[in-house]
Length: 412
Ligand SMILES: *Cc1c(COP(=O)(O)O)cnc(C)c1O
Image (cartoon, rainbow, N blue to C red):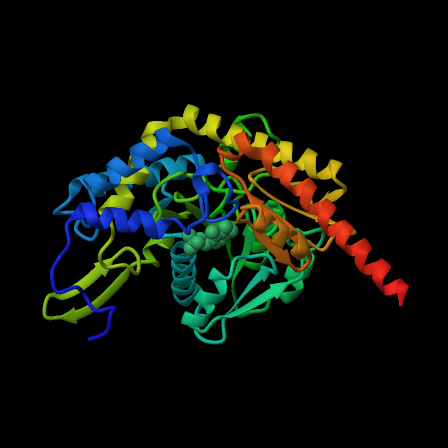
């Protein structure tokens, strides 16, 4: 037996809770707003609701709608809310999944089965997407033997003309993001929709990180380009509840323009000794807690609550945008939501990243092009000035360091 084996005697919760708190000591200080990645901190009120709802239904299983009509109802409510938010036409349909990757893989599966049925496409399929789309598409491609053709972007946005040139008769799907994760920019979905209609291919809009913020930012008066089902060529959209929906982790949504498209996602598997197993998505067991928490948070916030939380996010982004510009950074593109990337001509982004990490900030960085990256939450509106002060100090260190190195080089 190794030291890691299960203990012979169980331990009381009090002792375990203390040990778990101790384990969390080394985690990033996300409650203070010092992460720009992984966490969507909408404050204590939302946190209380999602935890309580999750705990209340943590044993229930979304696999069994007949056994748990409660969970089935909550999923229907959440899906209807998302469809309405994304301007879905009558007859559109959707489902909850465990996350953005799950939603994307399921959309690709639906598109593939739809193309098999409608276009007779069988093997050698490809998906045409800008370089900025999430690697979830590559994962789907690996699983379903579909080539992912990444096409260079223009001014950080999907380039419809270049994408058109990459489309051939085996193209199953084209993709745009609303927004893409690297730059937080909404691709020209209208032009992609026109392209999809002309080429008769499926257009998926990856709104994993935008689906539950962009509609509210628009309601708050920001002039966003169209990106949802309002564009006729859009076949499916992914939107993550566990991002700017502020739900507990393990909750996303995938939407389809028609029920027929949605039905292409269904797995009808077996038979085995229990007969056939029919599930809307890949999952068997589905966490009642994640569905319940998503339902509770959406009901708790309502349109007004979301508008206020998302206003805090865009306000934080505007503060940081102004602050970094003052420090001499260049913002990549013109972000309108909660993600921002920026680079400094004279300071190496990865050196800055290291300095900021040392000051307790856990964020992302881009390597191509090199830039700092932030994904902001309502909480960041309280700490934007701290971030900027630390960035100013880090920048001075990096620039000073560069000068020192240069002096040293010239001294030889
Ligand atoms: C987060 C994200 C995904 C993947 O979602 P997960 O929930 O992490 O699986 C896909 N696309 C975009 C644009 C994202 O931001």
